Every structure is written in structure tokens, then in C-alpha cells.
Length: 132
Length: 132
Image 1 (cartoon, each protein chain N blue to C red):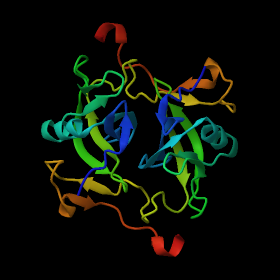
Image 2: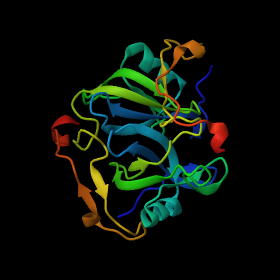
Image 3: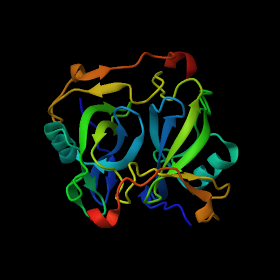
Image 4: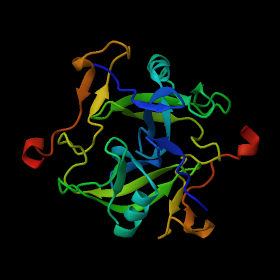
């Protein structure tokens, strides 16, 4: 059997990887993984991703210390996406929130909305200036 | 403010959309949305996606009746991914499972694994032969 690294971004074949808190089910972030990143994640038990903007592998928490301990990996029907059930150390988001999905979209028109249509629903866990 | 439809797949600019059960937090599926699909989702309250393989917009549940009623939309820090908190009618997966993530990956080597390394963790909700 084979994982289907079918999404090609900047010449790199990747799958979609969603990190989810293993206890609460909160979705923390979504990123990409190439084959090496998935293998490294399995071997080390720490989430590794492929950065499509920097074109390099990336250990989550490398600079911040906010690593993700992988408890379980789920794979989808098409074998082109995984859910990582993780214990998140610190916080997942570089903006200081536990999850990257810290805002609710309240607009009715996607072409035209402003700051007030984005409702912040989480509290900051850390100050990014202190960490990066 | 603007949603950042920055992922270009087959010439279509999309964001990543994760559907999550609004009550249990179970992740149901991951797909893509272009601007029209997101706008249609907001307007109708039913999840619409962009199929990158068929190059067309797609109302989830169009043929199966297994629609997703969108209760809340969360947006991530980069504004290039959303979480849809949904009430899933029927089941999300065309293979008959409530979630597309119905298998656990137990292999230690991504290059070489077999059926036994995939553990089915959900029960089928419907028989695909009866629906499609």
C-alpha cells in the first residue's frame, strides 16, 4: 500500500496534514508533508512538515520549542491526507495562540469584509516577541 | 481584509477547507474551496467545495444527500485555510464511513507497508452501493 503524495506544490509532491489536539479534538493547524517529512514524523514521534514556501523540511517547534508529540496518525479514504493526533507543547500558532484557527469569520460577503467581521475566539498563550 | 486563495491547483486558486463535526470535534474530511465555493457556502449554509480533479464546484451531498450544515467558519492565521464546523447529514465519506479518516496508520516505514498496518477504527454508516 502507498500513501498518495499527489498534490504537487512548487515541484514537491505532498499530502495535506492536519494537526489535532489528541484530547480535546481542537484543530491546531494544517500544513503539508512530503514523504520524508511523514517518515521522519513516524520515526521521531515529533511532527515534521514540508514548507512549500521555504522549500525545506521543518520540525514543528524547531525554533520556538513548541513541538508536537504525535500520538496517532489517521489516513483518509484517498490516502492523500492525514490527521495527526498530537500533544501540543506551548502553542501551535506563531502568533501566540494555541491554534492557528483563532478567529471566527462572521461576514456574509467574502469580497468585502473588515476586521470587525473576524472575531477572535482564543486567548494568547504566549507573546510572539518573547519567543521568535 | 481578504481570504488568501494562494494555493494554485490546476490553474484554480483555492484555500484548504477542513470539515469538523460541530459537536464532537471529529474531523470529517479535507477539501479545497475557491472563492465562489466559499461564498456559496456562506450564502446557503451548506458546504460547497471546488473539485480540483473534476474542475468544478461541488455541493457536498449533491448526489448522496449527505450534506453538511455549516454552523461556524474559523479562519487561520495566514487566511489560507478554514475549518467548517458542520452538522453532517448521513456520512462524510463516499466509502460509507462518517469520517474519511476511518483508518489508523500503524506502520513504521512509509515505503513499505500493507493492509494490516491500516487499522479501521470506524463502523460503516451506510453501504455505498445503496447510495451511489
